[in-house]
Length: 241
Length: 223
Ligand SMILES: Nc1ncnc2c1ncn2[C@@H]1O[C@H](COP(=O)(O)OP(=O)(O)OP(=O)(O)O)[C@@H](O)[C@H]1O
Ligand SMILES: [Mg+2]
Image (cartoon, rainbow over all chains, first blue to last red; front, side, top):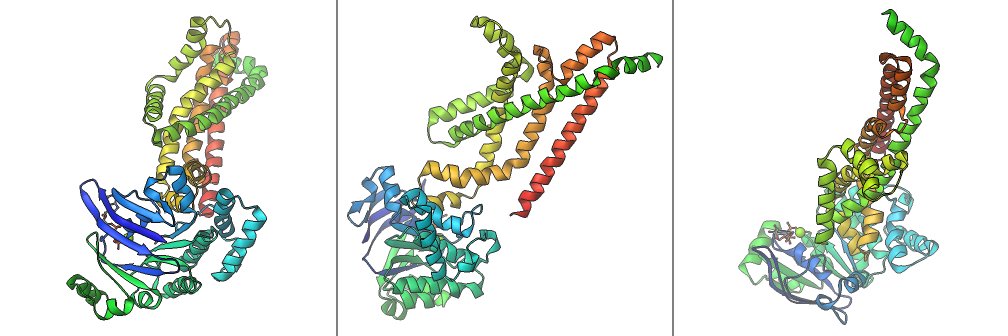
């Protein structure tokens, strides 16, 4: 379970998050949508404390992250995978090395164990044949699938996705969404920030609409997309659909 | 004119002696580079780190070594400090390597720092998000990328060191420069031995430049 309570985040004088609360239960898929600059990324980054909330609490399972020491926070991050808009694969490492680095370094897996796990995951995302390539030899879609596999190699309980397909050419969006969808079907608990409304409808158990640093709506996809209750959400949907 | 020809003739047997001095020069540059590289990494980590005292000290260190003449630093290290602490005679070569190393660390730290800053912040975040802590991230993810970016600048630093190493002749290290002076004093003719040194320095610097360019091209190909 992930629980965010009354999160505030300021960058100097800019108030990016203003009292954001949310709960994600085991196995749930929550999709966050909202206009650019509404604070979606910042909120996601507060959840694994890449960004420290100015105020408020983040709870993951039975741990209150905001009360933990920096060392303990690092430990909790093992449980929470994150996928970025721009992939951020390690360019000086091959696909395989990208996948085995953290499991060996952090979890203390032997090389053999880590490699076996990496191979399995690469098959899962359909990139086994790229195992010895360097990231810059892959297409954007392929890089993002490797990035997802790299996250999964840590066997996280939760996955955060920050606009995983926004940097991709249109023809590559589907291959990445398919991987995420199959993850959803396998029961992974996820928070996904995306502008892909069709995808949101399909995978979300809950849709959250953010605007100007606040959550304006939190509803089932059916209710949200068919009967948005705020003017802001109506506007947003009209523009994007 | 005749004098010059005689000079060259007199110098001829000493040419190998002068040329072999190049190993002393290159040895100093290499030793100093290794020290400078290690010192530079430590200093740059201090500078970008969160600990205010360390970053302050690292900046002061850099400022002093970059803000004073190397030849003076060398004189202080060889003549000044041993006298002050009554250390007796110190080995001039060791002294030169250490001084050049400390000096180079100051320049290198700025190069490495800019290299680290040029690595995409996302690399740090991706590693962090995987549960990797600061130091392993620095060592395995950030520094390898940073160093790859700054290889050309580090090659330049090595070339500078090779050329600047000529000033060790002032503390009686028999490098190429010093050997030319010795030969010149013996034959009472300055131009011929100095010309030999000049040509050698130039050949070495050109060779290093060529190597650096090849390395850079090789690196770019793997991008
Ligand atoms: N490190 C930072 N320093 C200062 N301002 C920041 C920082 N990070 C984000 N912001 C500001 O916070 C606001 C929200 O940013 P955020 O990236 O969370 O929005 P977003 O909803 O993810 O937008 P997008 O859809 O464009 O990704 C923006 O106005 C942004 O400029
Ligand atoms: Mg964003």
